Image (cartoon, rainbow, N blue to C red; front, side, top):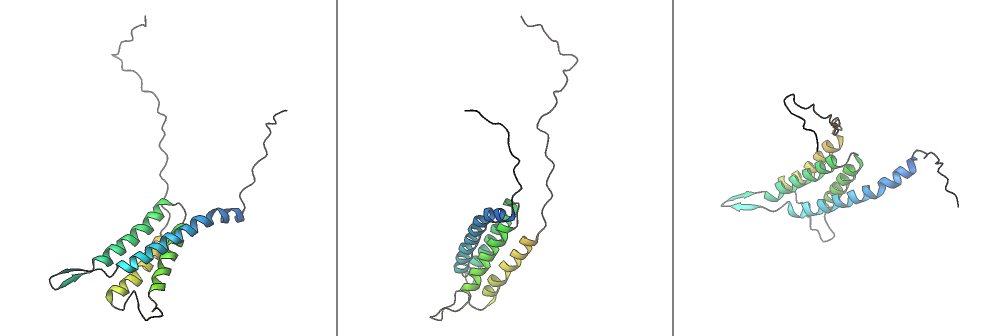
Length: 159
């Protein structure tokens, strides 16, 4: 049996195979966004009562989490597709939960807190997805030239 070392050039990836390779990541990103949208929707109404004042701690933490998730995905991935699908999943769940259910209950009631939870994630998603790509830093050369020996260093012959 002989071994043939001749190799055929690899054709460039077609758009169909590129789409097929990006689809699972996009769907997983949409799922992560949908899960966070559901969790944030449920927790955005939590308040901390100090005397007569009610601090919207749940809204603040939910918005910080949404911002962190989207910015983290934008910094983690070189592509905008995962961030876009995460935003679609998150905003889709927020929109779904803002509609009254068959029993008449609403998870996002009208008011300042509900309006903030409905609008701010959309604005954050728009800014994060549209943010321009940061320029790549030039690679630092890892191989350095050896520094010359100082003049006053004696070289002893090896025995």
